Image: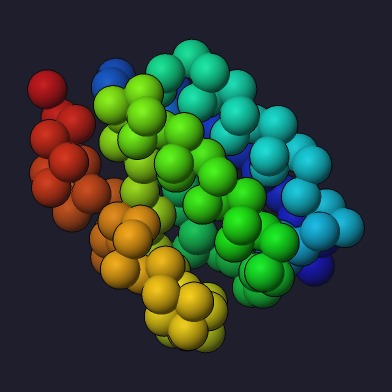
Length: 115
């Protein structure tokens, strides 16, 4: 399955959804969208419900934009990660660095984005 990325502006954050595989071969649309959101200084939630594969270069891109969001004092979190993808975050230790939530409601409430 090819990668599809979409975004939805919510009241206080942008919800980015990624479907399919996220790898070095197709990272460009994802990176462009996340970069735009970071430059707008938006809070960002990335929904990985339908992500089936992620490679190490894509993990690196997520770390880059997570770090940039932190420098802008903005929230950046991942939601709905399946167990296979979560293993990649655990192996690399990124589950301890990047905030990961089970669902959108939990993320919005924990990050206080509902205001």
